[in-house]
Image (cartoon, rainbow, N blue to C red; front, side, top):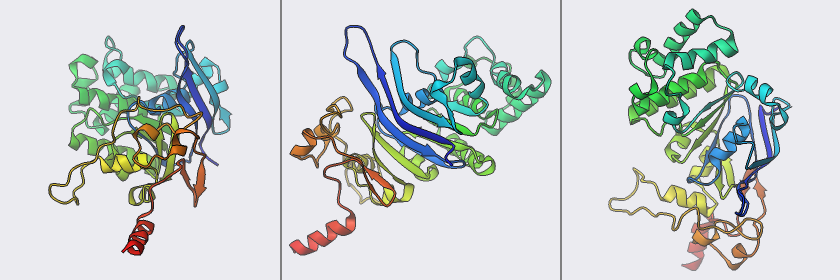
Length: 334
């Protein structure tokens, strides 16, 4: 049984005098205990909004959430605010993208970490402070005892991010959502944090949803990858299958636009033209068509259906050919 089941999750935002904007459009996926699932895509594809909807952190006014989010058989979207607060921190943890706006600027780091331990694990203050010191040490913050008495503005961006990760790990949640958790960190600390997340998943069976645009993080951490574009999942595959043989033109473009160590000297990167704003509504076309090199007339006039093949999801009228098929066709031409 899956730990988390997301079914047809849709999030739309409403502002007076403006058309409705759909940020997440029918997203469905599952996460099993001990599994790491990636949500990948450019900024504006709906990754962070999906995570906020799961955590129940979207504003009540101006946002409409529909679909189903089930955690261990409990429908999270129907829980009261009080019941959801009991779940957050204890069962569901989240590492936010921007540590400066996520931490309270007038409360010390120590109090912000220990209040999680006191609230959800019932620890007395002295024991909570000792546990908080150990957590800060685990995430690589130097001199953790002194840092507990400091405020967010006294820490560097990287240390603030690590403090957020310590808070998320404090109650050893069964599901952890990490929204770009290593963006503000240097390469050495990034590797340390990723190793810590791997250890958490391996030792405690915690499920992890990794939200990132860094395909290097995906390659080293995720078991299954969901590629989002325009609020929908356009491709889903196991990590090795996705990197060896990307089928959706968007996935192929993401991989082609990052540098590779095995690339020939002087070989240029191939960026995806345009931006996320250059799309078509999903209700009558493929949203990626204006930026797609494989686009056909049908792509601009008909919504591509979900296709499943050997456990792999693909939403495309004209996918990239597998390498073996492309080579066979080239041989026939010769």
